[in-house]
Length: 257
Image (cartoon, rainbow, N blue to C red; front, side, top):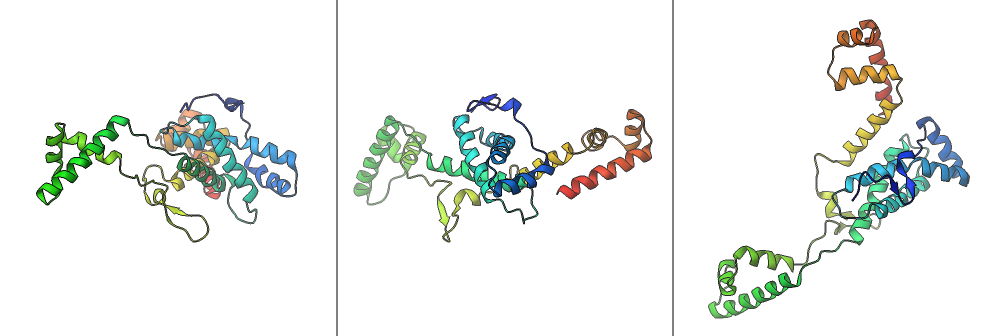
């Protein structure tokens, strides 16, 4: 998957527009009233969300154009189902929808291919196991099967595992008539949890809404580890001004969360 690909599905991703957070809810209200022009503008203005989500799936050998299109389906579903009465940002609501749509696509298009030679080895191992079981009245060990076939025991293990029916991470384990719960949902990833990822995105969006001076102070204080006095000396204002601007920036960020 090419993450740094500039053109995806004929769209130049380096020139994607961005909609201001303050305009989001007003545009959604117009969309729900049937304004198709605003709907198209809103979709195009949120394609950055899709682009950021598909980067999470860069380890999958899937065409980036396909994932982008599927992600757009999730984005459109999020737009059509967003509830303005909820006190939640659109991006916070849309990201899980986009992720879910891509996961369903990967689940439905998942396939595991086993080579012919691996299958042949597996079937020979099964025949040997059956024959030795009848002969010894007990199931043979992997070492005994490998010895009969004159191959390494590791090859026997790989071959037998290759023909086992795999349990998909997207196998439904519970369904109450609505969205199913899959095995994938029960696997915990401490580094890439959806909520942490959404929080990171929210933080980045919050910082982008600050003034340039506030951004500079936040960067120097919390990313570069400088003291307020060091920041004051470097940008040429008083320590009290740094403290005031820092408090204002943090207050704005907290409100967004």
